[in-house]
Amino acid sequence: MRAITVKSIPDELYERLKKRAKDERRSINSEILVCIESALDEGERSHAFVREVAEEYRVKTRRFRLGDALIDRAKNEGRR
Image 1 (spheres, one colour):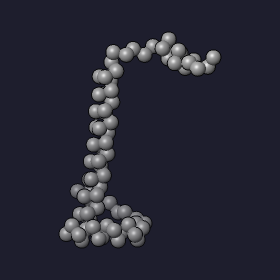
Image 2 (tube, one colour):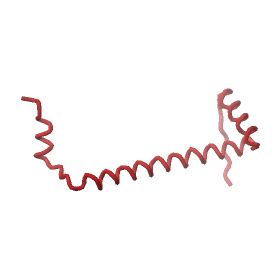
Image 3 (cartoon, helix red, strand yellow):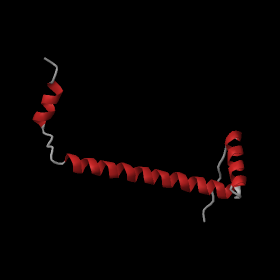
Image 4 (spheres, helix red, strand yellow):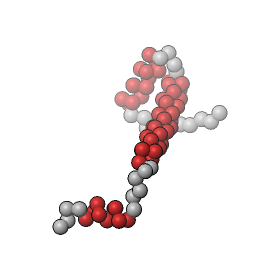
């Protein structure tokens, strides 16, 4: 396994981490690993959610063709 050193942890953050580790009956190192894993998993879930929503919109709007003429007309509406 790899080891890393985290430098310059603000006192307030360290105290929060220490309290959470104690509350969860984990070492500070284990709590840091849980936090990192949770943050990475959350990011992956967020990306998956965005992809899922985008695909839903693609399916819903598939019948609407967006061409140059439609875009030009929309840009010029109200400019007269």
